[in-house]
Image (tube, rainbow, N blue to C red; front, side, top):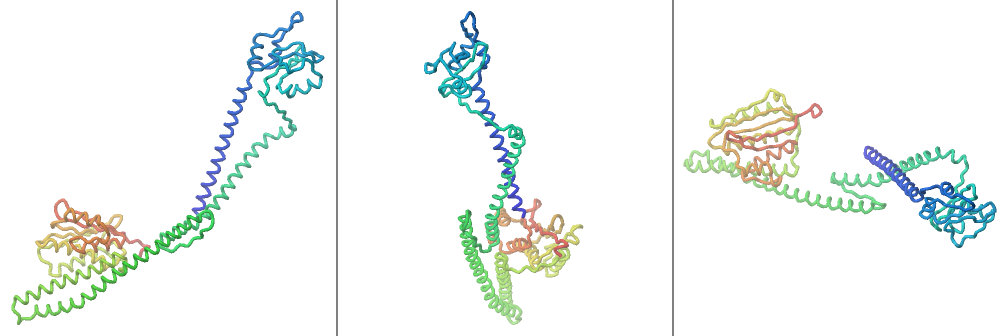
Length: 457
């Protein structure tokens, strides 16, 4: 409804604008034409003035110089007829004109032409003064209208203009409706394409070619989407299968290695070697788990179990778990919860968010073997800002570029999958991630998550 209102309003305004422009142009052209016609037919003297320029003295007719110049410049000839129709005076009278005229002749040329010469007449004291122009120089047309029609002109002209304006608006509305009905299925088709739904529009009508193009594009997109989905499913399934196949023999290896590590009858060196096998197997197991999780997050195949989570309690519990897990004294974990973030709630998957924060803390521990101070901070602004900082070695510039501006969402950095998984988890929660070094040394990773609202709960 909003679309049709917009289209129709545009059409009506356009029609009104075009009508107004046409009226202005027509009036301007009419005014120019009138002025030009007036300039062409403009006379220095009227016929009566020229007739007054003819005087009679002692039986001789004399034409004033100004009247003669005007006749030669504006007209062509002139003559004077007496009461009997005889020519008693003339100026440049053409040879093809007679010198005597009957009453019917006078009545005819008085209104129209004399031998195709446009003429003008004026009665002066000496007779009928006739002024003629060159043939083809003037178009004469007599107009007669009933008086009532002329009286109604001031009503009819505005009425016709108003009728034209209303007709233009109605036509604009009609064309707008037709255009809207033609474009509506196309717009629906484009909307379906954005939702990755198949589109099959009718190819008849004025916009048939455009509809056919949309149908073809939709078919290609559906085909590409199917191929991509098939490829992604195959990749994820392959990674999940390999991960599962690795876990079983890896568990057996870890089991035997653990038994050998605990076997007191073995030499100490052999037990230490068995311990190395256990720890490396644990790393392989964690790597396989990370690879599987990263693959599922990348292709949106990881189920997100959304619940309301109190972040402050979650962070405190995680810090306690790390400290109670036998963490070396060279590491110090401090949890800072700002006053306004004490009761901050977010909607998300608690296990995934726990995994993200855990990855950051583990990353600080792993890449700072000599120990560091780790600070976990929770603040609340527009969203929840959760940051994990350490006083360690920080990131190289190359790592920062890779982390903040990955070349692709699946790009794997040299430092493992841990931080990639963090970014993927926060992205799945509609949040943002920023990696940066601190001026005083060390680095920080800031996670911004949308705050839960009453409606979310």
